Length: 271
Image (cartoon, rainbow, N blue to C red; front, side, top):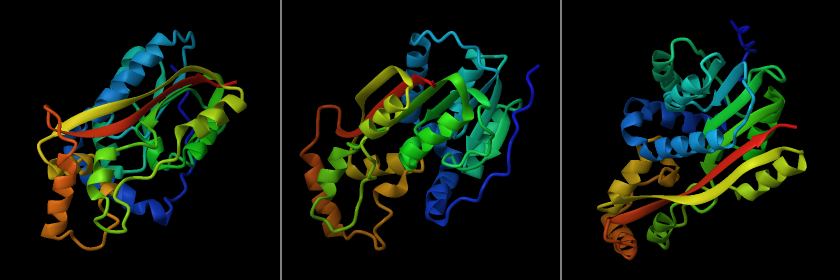
């Protein structure tokens, strides 16, 4: 029986991040039905972690940004003796995860300010969470809470997401309609400079197809990623939508209108 994971008092969420948390709270009830990209990213991360042939048998694993707990099922099966901590800053997501994983430690906190002491975990897992945060701060916190030799497994997004939407919305207004994410090579360089042993680094597109532009946008919003359109204070006019649809149609393929995620996967061990 492993010792309980010591949990400190989590700091409050910064006001600038409240809107993102509220968006994920609203998406929680229908998240699993819509999160097929998230599941694909998680499944591929699990494959990469298994292929890395790590010999470590961690006593405790952190699922940082656990959502409704999809990834935790694989983690619990792979390391059944490990104490599993599920962390997310959206309470509604955690409510679902806690039902699915009653034996796990469940914490509502910010991934950039983890409420744990140094070296608490032998493994750190995060699937599609770093892109909503400062990846360098996420890496710094992962470094702090991991023990020497502990493994890091991250699936996130690069800087080139949704080029189809970017093109479709171009010329509509001056508002940003696509999430801005820093290039992942920055924090990969930080990781290498700090002495981490990078076992896997993969970057490839993950693509889905839709019948029209509104369906593509709904798919993004259904998983809480409302940054695509939420920055605009007023609804788009009918004429604006006609222009958006016309520009999006230029991307149409036999399978439909593509929507491309810039997928990034990292497996590394801490020095």
